[in-house]
Image (tube, rainbow, N blue to C red; front, side, top):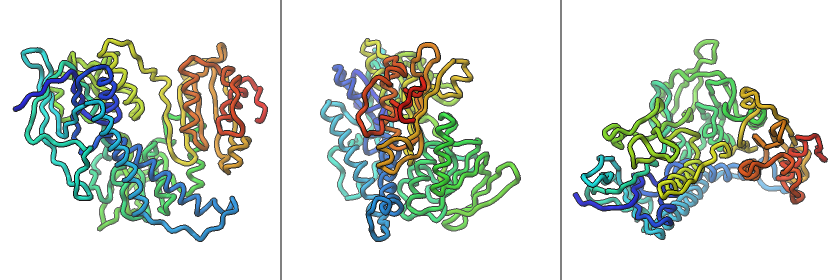
Length: 489
């Protein structure tokens, strides 16, 4: 077995792994990345964040042309859906970005190995060994392999390095006793590539993934029913924000069954009967597809962690210290396989911080200022503490709120649902949390995260002159409302 020596080996080329690799190369390290996929980017780029947003944007344009153009004085014939063309556009977006990442890795002289990695312990020189076995690579759809894609090693090879970063990501949980079949009971991967619009889509789970993909197919004409075990959607989001979004999605035609547990799925040809219980006994409903979006679990199986003593917590995540080092010196972990929210941008931040810590720097990720967003329409986003968390912790605060209905730019866009809410400490006015539901909430939240990361106050935001007419004016008005000084409320 051939052996290759590096300064750093990274297992996984998703948002945590490829970003860590580029930063390590910038710091002068010789880096190898092992990726089991044919392309880089991980779940986020290949079957998550990017393809879902491509379909969300396409389906929103379709919905607007059908339902809103007339309000703007634009008369058109009823739009016709070309789902094949929509899917081709999505795939083109993904390919351009995955090729872009492969180019960046090549430009930074990072070696990409397509295969499966297993940790083999340390050699006599104290170097960590990683065996890479070739992965079976499906042929490209056009019959040719992109020159930028990773090339599988012809035989197993052995990599050695003093440091290894695990960035293997996560996979979808299945419902107990209801395995995925890839046809009727599906994950987000299959729900991003349906070849027709389902007549009825049942979504198990009222979280980010379920609501986003449910929105896509509802806009395109499907009947959508979301079944959630808890009494509310988006349980970790600010309650007012989540409840406003819930009402909006119901107006759009998405049906919700809260406090509902799916107990079984019975296949009947290409359709299914979903058995569920909402607390009043067993019920059934027929559907074409069941999208299971009840959460994700870390991908650590098959890496050989147990054999070398890497510790895992009760959820199967790698236990790490403040420098992202596991219980085995020299083995590090970032992203979905460690504690914290399973977000691509969180993984990227950790990848950079981990590499810089390895290089002797004192980098720190400010987890309290990592924003989250759900890309429905209207969008919802938040950063920092919710009102519920502040009350539970006994932290005194003031709240300021401004509705998009009173904002000129939102009126021009005919997007007046929702609000901006700012929570500031009662004594020092420091911003503790910002929560937005409304147009472009995912873009607006970055201003809030910036202010909070610098320890800014509601007064600081209120003193910043915002361009008019723009959506960010709502943030300033909410900051003014913290002290009951809003001009346009």
